[in-house]
Length: 288
Image (cartoon, rainbow, N blue to C red; front, top):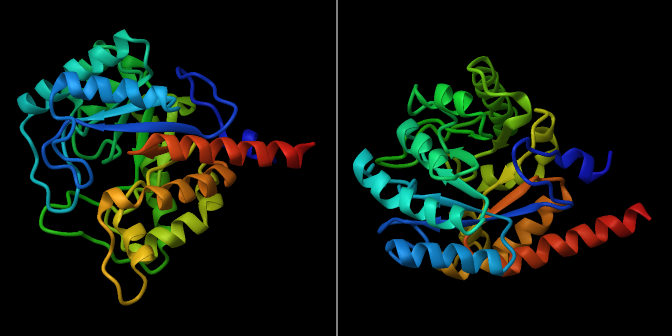
């Protein structure tokens, strides 16, 4: 099976002939990699449009940091951060994803023009999320999640990380389907860095084929994460800061594209946009 067939398409979204690039707009003061840079609505919308200019296929807008130890923002604040940015980008014709664990934020973002809901809890954080997404008909990203990371990296113990992540994702996908979300609108995400250490993340990336066995398009969100810092630091060094991990992110993007990922989620678009296009060109040469 070619990567193109394995990659899959998501009903309700544009079709791309290669791994798609999802740019990240964090409308937060405390994101781990770019907190505060795009906290203002105008700056956030401009940043999203710049990402599209650099090759992003869709833009993921979030108003709540999910880094380890982050405290949750209240609902009103999250809405105030997210909805104007979603509206601004959607009005410019951008395919917008909303990154939220709250059904109310998802519902209002979809009404404001968002096309996709990206819930890092896979519908576990808010019991109203799955009914809201099902009623809207929007595609839904189901990420592997073992709980809020306040106070540290919770429940990051595995006997066999690939098997357990696949099994737990399978259970979430079944719950989402039973809740009324159509199978052709479900995307899965292994949740790199969420209740996982660097070794877990690397093993999951080495076995993306097992995640394809779930039968849904795959989103890989490795951008600037701690495991890349650990790899770049080597055994004795200290990890480079998040914004110095973009070349490593682009390398993961190329590898994920080569393994049939539907999309990669990144903070810096240009290098990854180039990487996935090169991966597609090589794939095309193999098919000739």
